[in-house]
Image 1 (spheres, rainbow, N blue to C red):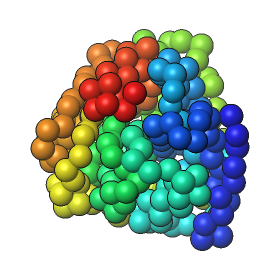
Image 2: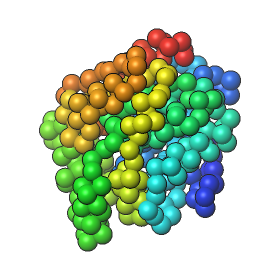
Image 3: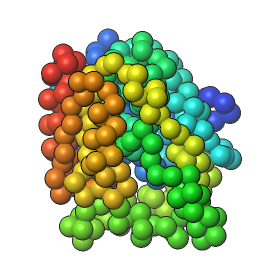
Length: 264
């Protein structure tokens, strides 16, 4: 695996790629308050012969967290620049939550880069501006720790919250730079992708978790329904990050989609 830093708009953006340069590409974008590691168990279960690219969204993980607020357009442009730097075309772009919003926007903007998308636990519009600004106010008053327990409630199923793994994901959330988390909250608050997403005409797999308190299955299903011919897969018993809670089922659903569209 090779790591690479791409600089765009004054921010250094971390990426990692593996697999042959000429192999079919699959790209993964993480959710708010996480990093590229949410995909660890899924990637190891995918078929051989893929070029796999992961990156950390602006403000997260190993990428810079410049002062915000950010816009969805800027986050989409970050992804665009990363794919261009790696000379990736005709990829399958897998995005979870805010990563799924980036997937929708990039697919509408760069048909040469994206041939299919996986919209995981996301929506064309998530929450309301007021709800996001309420979250920002809590963080500005008490740090990310002030929202951590609430986030765990909506991220994970009750069963998973009893496991030893919860502490790791809570710590990852709390370690997210405040500027990055708040910046991305502003980007989500200002994003309404219903019109561009309704215009997409490409293969789509939508994935939802039955216990997702952040982007409930109905929201994911409604977003998928904007795009003719989209597929929908519900992972029962999983919350907002099913690639962590149910990586085996997630990888099977993703592999089935890749085979169906001739990408493996």
